[in-house]
Image 1: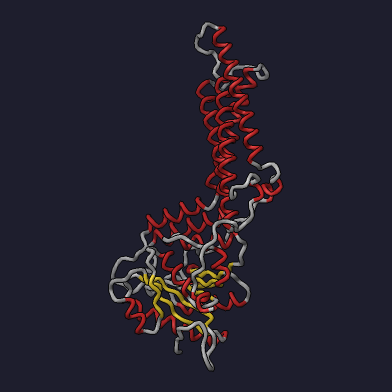
Image 2: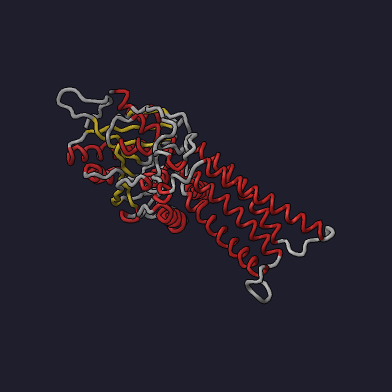
Length: 421
């Protein structure tokens, strides 16, 4: 099948609809196999669905002649200067002509004919179709044991827990996505975490994500792969937390606030004579509890800030409870509440000072009032400053609870389909 390098065909040819994009960095050993395999996949796609396609090699600075070899073999080479797996794929996708984008590694480990049914799923309405190596089969020696039995299951499990993606194999490198879905996701990760970003944002935007079986074979190179399991595993894990305000900040905030408030409440009830007997929470516990409450309050502000940021960037919907509180979530209210708490703190500290002076400035027999006053002051400062931060993140608007999705800085489109239009 003759591959065309223009946005549309002339004469009896079909318009380009499918682009197979491969990130490439010094892959002369495997390029011939991969391009031939991709060519066979495109032939099957044309026979099955009547769609023509192209092969795009997104070269990330090869020095072994990969660019020249790919061109000779009939692929179109796109040079991507920004380094990294994700950067190469983004550069290739942006320059691809197809409405349906297939991504797969350039090392011979994936069979691109496994992507043929993925196109069928996209035609059926799916936005993204993932390959599942655990459904299709992993050949002996194709995946290190720590990746197969530890890294991939753990990271996929965490991703599903955080984002409810319902994916078997979140790190399969063979997948297909509709161009409009790709552009709506606004992907920008340069490294291996690009694979997680795609799944996470598709889940957050409630895109339809299907899965089909994919096989994994040992790669064809005689050198170590670009993937570094521990380094890239950590990058994936930290990225999951960065895109999950609930688990990065919300859950710790709730635990700290609840635990600290419980200790302070029980200590206060004992000091007021409501509860009798020996208290279990002395000075050490109340100091720790004050730290927990103030830290938990700070974490709650960070949860709101990162949530609003995701909403404004367009990949996260506003939570219903926050939408209902939009009239309350304003800069003015944050300043009033923060100022009120700071005033209460100053008055409480003054009362403690009066009591201290009345007792000849001897050491305080009970530090709980002092701790409560200090805690109120810290929370007041955090509330006021946090309100300013939230207003800035919401787009410099005082009613930060009304931030609209997708109002962040727009990205300049660079894809080849737009250039050809």
